[in-house]
Length: 447
Image 1: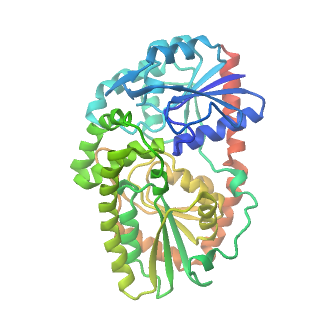
Image 2 (image 1 turned 180 degrees about the horizontal axis):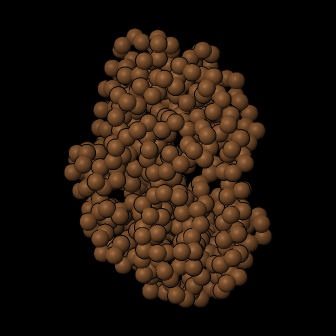
Image 3 (image 1 turned 90 degrees about the vertical axis):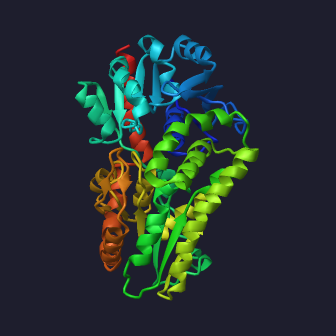
């Protein structure tokens, strides 16, 4: 098949969308398909092909709610005139989907809504009013969860021709990974010491502060305990260009909502990293401004960390930004992965934890509860949601559940093993690619 995958950002940009599309694209190429990715042009991409995947860049930005700029017509012509057997687009509310609304009837389209993160935002009301008619022009819809706002939206509007295909973790990374016996020594960890891990970009919405607060309050019965808080700020280390100003402006309205909910500082940090992390780039004075805001947020977290360290209870937090190979070792060595993000769709980090044989404790963000059931390796700590669907973490309750699990390491080992077995059977990218390929063949055959 001749396949086109459309996503706002792609390698070398780093993020959840990018990782899912890269995993699928490269595996489809290995299976003999011709795969092209249509995506945003970024200055750090110095190649037009990566591991057999062709990359077509477009200087386009924005979405229908906030306006789109760039070579929209060139993008539409590329998609409609190159005789692709199928076109798969990932995520609403961004240009690679929104720009194709006028020409969807001309192509065989598979669409992944990817959560509808702005469904409850007032400025997107008209967008979602128009969306059902657009979705009816798609040949097939793919969802990551059987119960979430995007699939509920589809069902409410009577949309059929849909599949539920979960996310996963890479078998090439986690199958037969060698356990590095020097890992604990490198971080000053004793053999009997509890090790916990959380992973997420350095924004308040990822729940790092709540995780640290829960760690402070958790009663580990005097046992030594270390929390590795891996904040992913390594993604901020690449150069940026002035064209990012457009992307910053597009986030301004969303940032106001965060300001109302969590205050000015988290809103600014969320904007800076929501824009820059996705592209994996940063620029001159924007970087300096964002670094200052990020530094202020980290100062707040650092005060809490110092409070934990000053108590003399044998607890410590290591604020890290590990390279990928070292992060995988952290997954493997951790007794428990903890997750308290405020907003997600289908978190890849939970699948990666399970793939490493490490159980997780999470609030019910995105479809975390479903992942816990699917894998048998997760425990869900109850949490409420606000009117816009953001999870409100209770550090006291999270600390209680955390401490309870930590007291039963045999149980953690047991569900960790169960999770790894279930991941190997159902949630490797190779097995997930089987499902996508089946959908592609079905859609192409009905063309």
